Length: 476
Ligand code: AMP
Ligand code: ZN
Image 1 (cartoon, rainbow, N blue to C red):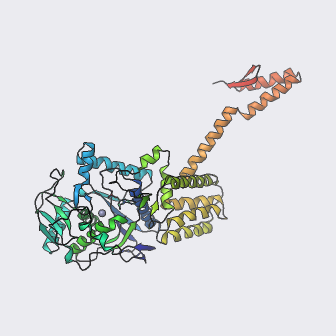
Image 2 (image 1 turned 90 degrees about the vertical axis):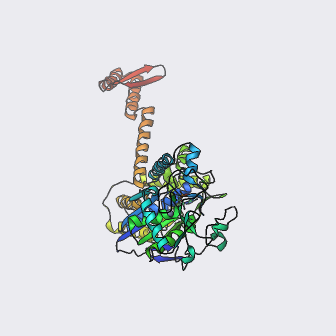
Image 3 (image 1 turned 180 degrees about the vertical axis):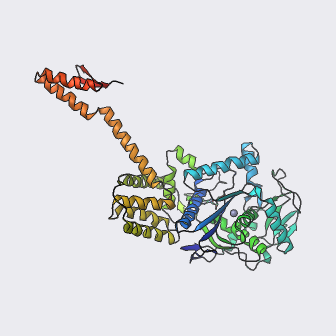
């Protein structure tokens, strides 16, 4: 499989450390608010990546953190803890907020058919792991204590900007306009591993450490959780593109300094969902959630379809018009699948050919838009419906668009609508009998007219004659 690696900035052949196995880590949500549909774009594409690995036969172990402490308002270690901000906004405790938004996150994931990672670990569960890593980093001379906090010393690295396709000015987070400079830092890009001093004395969650009572920095959480569950070598690490710097850059710095060797081979970054005013973001306050889409009548599957139609390494522009187009395309697709009949035998050769096209799209740097095209190729293929349905069911193991179940639900809805329309207009067979009786009466053939009425009555169908004509009721 060819996959773009942010480390080499090229598409590389994916080769796992252990043949047949993939160790995968993905940055999880900061649970101080609902996930917005931009965050969920990232999780949808990571889900497709995981399912692609499984489709290709790999045994995948995927770990995800839940950030419930330490992620400050600015990624550059300044500002208030986002969790504290959420708790204050809602007049609840930090742990209540964490539980509520963690549950809300997984509810959204379920609606979008995003599989739960094998291991989900809240950051507050692994304090001992962070302390161990930070202690080792201090011993090795990679970290220092200043002003009560422990900082990572970026000057000890051969190369800090590992994803250096950024421009230098963007990288200098510590000196960005509006961001206060932390005078404890020896180098502008040094970052906090452990806080004991913070301007915000009401920091809710604190733990004992060799450096005083405090709390971990955001970056150390992902290193600690990954090392705990996946060991010292990782195949692939994923996240949104905004996480590449400083978050992932700092994760690499601290993990590799701690381990003394390369940590992770492939870095997978999903580009942003933008609105016409720029990146959709939680901190801007205005953002769209899955529940909001549902309240406007949108099926979450249509949003997943919308995401799959574009490549993960391109920004995706959200507009209601674009979403409406995706809804129309998705509904039309499901209607076409609903029209297939599950008759005939599956043609193994035709199925293999269809699967080859689909696999080729995914192996081409996870080209989901071509994978969606492969779905249309199935519908156009010169093969029987049973083969088409088998191919669609197979593809849906990766796409998770409910291709088969939504089509089945539509078929059922169509059958119910037909029955309902019939019930309203009347049963055609009974209506024909009523017409025959009226014709017999007209010809003064009353014996035939009575015979028809009695025959219907024997079946519990009672005729009601009035000036307007004859109707019927069915006896219980
Ligand atoms: P957070 O909950 O803020 O830590 O973010 C969760 C994930 O969503 C991270 O992987 C972010 O990189 C990603 N993310 C944030 N904003 C967007 C966006 N507008 N589009 C796509 N992914 C995003
Ligand atoms: Zn992370």
